[in-house]
Amino acid sequence: MINDARQAVQDASAEITLGADKGYDAQEFIEACHEMKVTPHVAQNTSGRRSAVADSIATSVGYAISQQKRIRTVVTDIAKTILLPILIGMGLRSIFPFSAEPASNRVMTIAWIVLAVSAILLLVVHREHLVGLSWQGVLSLAALMVVALFVGQILGGPNTNDRTALAITCAMRHVGVALVVAAEFVGVRTLVLVMAYFVTAFIVSTIYLNWRRR
Image (cartoon, rainbow, N blue to C red; front, side, top):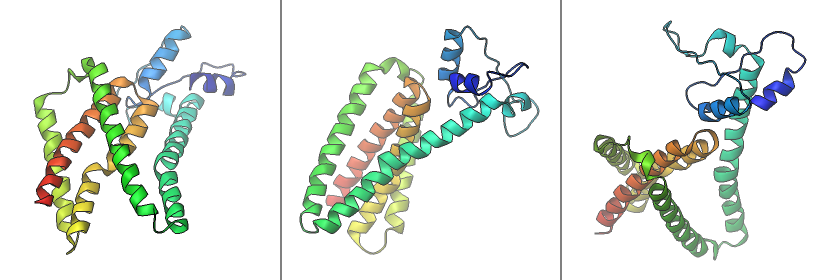
């Protein structure tokens, strides 16, 4: 980010201001500043405006480059990790209509196992980042999952399988997007907290599925 900004304004004669806002890329920004022996400027919202970014930062070339890079990266990552697999699955189903569904079930089972094991390993290796996660927070996450499952159950229609599928989707759908964004822009701590959210959602969803099978 800083190197992109420096390249864009290398011929500028005035003072250049770079900034990071709302913690999305603050860690990367601070570390890069330290490596370049640059003192970062921190802006705090004290005027009641929506943004905590000072006008001098928000209108700078470096900040604009940072924002454009952030949006472009998020859109690209979501397209690669969510939209592309969906399109590939739809294409394979149209080509192999009879074998696609059994294969899909096996692939989904393997994917869930890999994701669950990876989440547990990440939490174990970086357990020091879970210090700020209280039991109140875990219970709040569990309550959020229960509400999401309830909403999906109510809005799923008369078919039992549809209600179950929508309930699980409501509880788990946005975790993938959060993981993509967290892995791209923030440090390990945020990624660990998102994985803690995933583990909580996985446990609650498993209890729900066992209840639905009875």
